Amino acid sequence: MPTFAEKLTDPSRFVIGVELVSTRGTTADVQTAKTVAFARELAGCTDIDWVSITDNAGGNPMMSPQALGRPLRDAGTETVIHLSCKDFNRNGLESQAWQLAEEGFHNILTLSGDYSGTGVNGGAKPVFDIDAIGLLTLLGRMNAGLDITRPAAKKPAHLAPTQFFPGAVVTNFKLHENEVVPQLLKLEKKIEAGARFIINQIGYDSRKIHELALWLRQRGHGQVPLIGNVYVLNPGVARVFQAQRIPGVVVSDQLADLCAAQASSPDRGKAYFLELAAKQVAIYRGLGYRGAYLGGVHALADVQRVLEIERGFGPDDWKQFAREIRYSRPGEWFFYHEDAATGLADGARPVDFGPPNARNITYAYRFSKFTHDLMFTPGKGLWNLGEKLCRGAKDTMQGPPGMHAVEHLGKSLMFGCKDCGDCSLPDIAFLCPESSCAKNQRNGPCGGTRDGKCEVEDFECIWSRAYDRLKHEGRAQELLAHVPVMQDQSLRGTSSWANTWLGRDHLAKKTAKPTRP
Image (cartoon, rainbow, N blue to C red; front, side):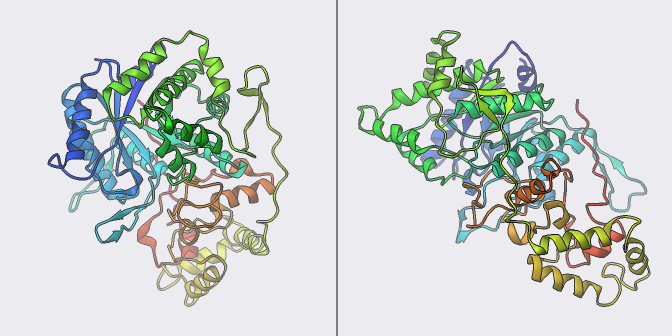
């Protein structure tokens, strides 16, 4: 039987995946028993190439994806395990990865993850020690054979390489330019960090779907398999998506109204929604995606009905469907102009980007840039003096007496500094990811913004603000030039100035690039 990787890299195949959402409880619980029964049904279906299992979806506690994946694995069904960064630090994620490798789960969908939801006695504390790019970097190093130091060992040990086939997600159904472009730039960095396949987030706009495929091809990433997300709606779910209660998922008012109108039909629109899903599958096939990923289905009969409808379409019917499924929002920003002949994206005509926005170019930003260049340009300005003073200090982690106190006071007043000791201010246009980002995202934005606002707090995403600052200076393409960053928590409470001058922070560390099979 071909592996998931072999199926994706076979140009003659269009692979079909189904999402299996884990539930809370054991098989003694009725809902969990139904989910396990559905998994077993999927395992016996020859129309399905792979099953994808979520990891605490919505940030809520659920049965682990491995537990649901074992019956599928034992039946020979290719399984993709979701692994998110919200519940584990890097050590916990590595431990989870070793367990997956030991149990024969090699296909992993990496995610930064939703903000933690409610558990026992209230809200859980999120982790976000690293993000999806950090996780991809970790898995890549494990695939290359991880070098570790064991206690009392005389020399480092080289662990046997793993065989992970990691993928990533992109959320390009965004409203504003300063949301869309950072998402696309971060996707490129995910690919550089080792993502071997890409799944787009839920959305219902064929022009944006086409735009994503064009962007990847034109940026030299056309060889990376792109899988289209097809979520089978119903009137209730459409209202939830319209209200943006699920971070990153978009349903426009127009589509939500159409879904609501189906509520009065005898089957509550089930036939309508299954046909809509089949049309989306046809669109993805027609646009050259390598597969479709079906979500929102809980019965094998519904999966088979979607595929049956899609098989009944003519080879060019997808073009008409692409014109129909164009549910964008008023004022939505696109990377490419519309092709008048097809209603899709015109890859030959990128849009004229809007004028630079100067509202985020503050005096604090200008002052921070000036002082950073003066103090932290190697070999220039105050670099040599700072390095000399810190190297000769009694406590080299704090620098000369009083320096750390002055540093922390100034950065606290200007940026709300949390004294992490491994500062990312220069990476994010002098915006602090610890004080101003609920998920401490240091390698680009998460996918959860709602019209430019953080999914957790009601303020503008720092990555949108950073994009505006760099665009104003003609440096927007440099937004993610620094990645990957894996913050060193052992430096917390020490002087980030001393750590930069003495080469201890992430700016000085060279992260090994993953070796691709």
